[in-house]
Image (cartoon, rainbow, N blue to C red; front, side, top):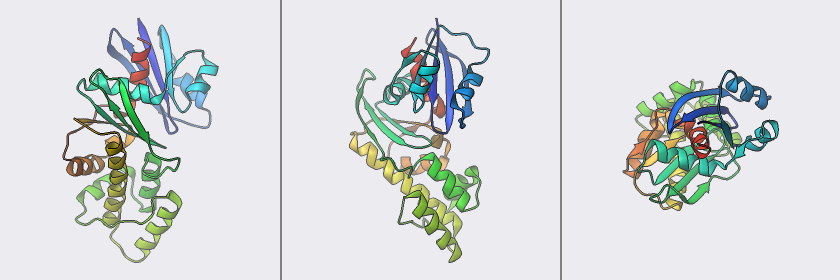
Length: 246
């Protein structure tokens, strides 16, 4: 039996096929104003016996192609447990939200916390801050990682933070130092969420922001814990959805 899982996020759409407990195919694409068209493109040429949707667009997809639907929390719990069987804590930083999830020994969700509706500390926030500092997203993380000093910003609201960063640059502040301060602010918010769920053991770090090495290093330094980044951290939700239907 081949089961498909599709995670329809605000920024990207991810698809995973699972057969007999093994990943046999995965795809991902940027979301657009026509979410269903992107979904159709990802599914093109694939055969599967069942499909389960998760993410922001899960109910939209369900209306389009009747399927199973599960919450992002359940999907990420299942996916994280699959890639790291000893996982007891999950941190997911996606395009528009941040989630922290605690699991019991059997991989069942015990507690979860999410950031508020503001996009502060998410992938979109990082993208805007990188553009404001005139870095590519890859440069942004690398320059922050190499910075000697961290220059803090007072606001994590995207609009006010952008204005504050522009003013700091105009005053001659070190761009790399500002970048590190922004990364530090995101890490501090993430750690606060992890503490609220009673973090324990290795943290599985999922979502697109997990590709950012500066975020990973700062998390490890401040938590004094191991951070496990899957080979494809963006696929954890889609993987969990596929496993739910397997």
